[in-house]
Length: 136
Image (cartoon, rainbow, N blue to C red; front, side, top):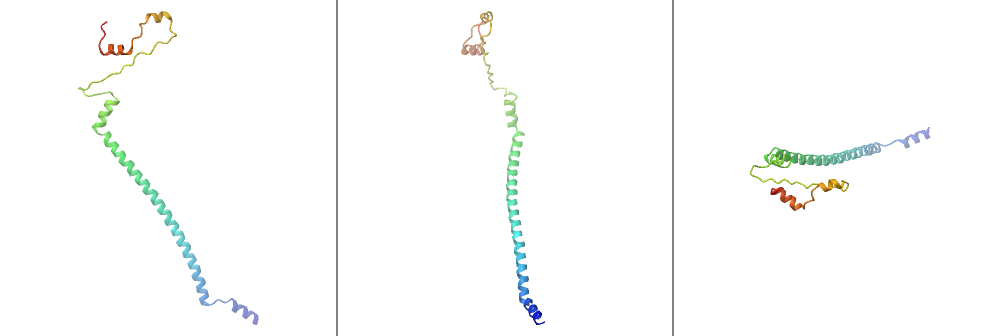
């Protein structure tokens, strides 16, 4: 029985050793939890930065849309649309209409048709005839 008592005494831990082991286990658990909280905090900060960038971009887009809406509802937009798209102008304005000359005749036409056509005038004469009525 002597041997069994000796082995029991060797296996026994003192109160201070038990408290030290419990303290180490609790410290490791706290460090693990603190590490997880720090990682979660870093993830939240990253998401916050992304959301702030998104909000800033959306605010800029909203500002530009409001400016566009204000411009479209103004008289300046209506006047520009009338001038460019509908070709309207003010009553005292002079309007210029550009007329392009007729395309040259292809060589595949028969000689009878080519003889019946007038000889081609220079462009400056065509323009002169358009602006100043010909005397024909």
